[in-house]
Image (cartoon, rainbow, N blue to C red; front, side, top):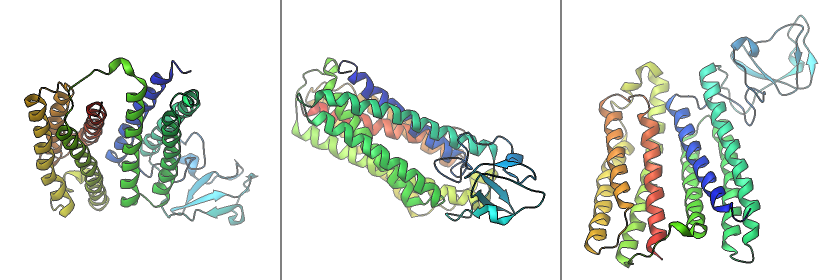
Length: 337
């Protein structure tokens, strides 16, 4: 297990990126409430594929906890029972956490796959804490960080439930995103600690390291702002309809302009990093990837605003931002050697 630990850390990191991707697809498609309950989906471990499965039927066996949609309300079975010819309210409870009661098979399965990805990631994190125990005598920080990442994943799962119960509350979604990035930072720290074969001796510069910290912080702030802008778009889509999504940024709020203008500061700081790296001959080749990601991040942002959200640009925009933060943070770790 100890020899496999670096690989387990990388699997955890990859699974986390897949969660970011799956989550962005959920939001891009408006599928956040595809499963109105948590952790099950309409009370099922495997969600329905047709709406008739969620309608009340006479002479049918119902299991405790399964849901039906009736009169535009969500009802949950109180116990196992078999329905009679007439609908009997005493067998059901109205779902009280929210009043959302719609079924869309695409939205439901998009959200369900997102949850499956999270479960898979949770399994990798379980192996992470088991494997980290072997390092207790050698380096206590490794198991401490591993258990910290695991408990933050549990916190993320609870936040995911809160997001559904609150019908996609903007502040909760932002916290959900920021905590995810903190877990990324922990996994990158673990990667740097246990994967020695990729480390190489480079020149150090306190100025370069400090600017790297600023660049990583700016990226974190920008992603949080982007989450808020994304929520504004979602709210506009609800008002205008998904088919009129291209109209959602015709009259954007202040957060959008802050998010867009802050890009200038981010480009300036990262350009400064590139200049310092060349001037001081520090040899950090990953900075080339930062410039590429900045270009792709800017391009997808322009496409979303000026070309009416081409398919996939929202997911790519988020993923490029996460990769950018990841590389910046890992460079911070390398520059401190």
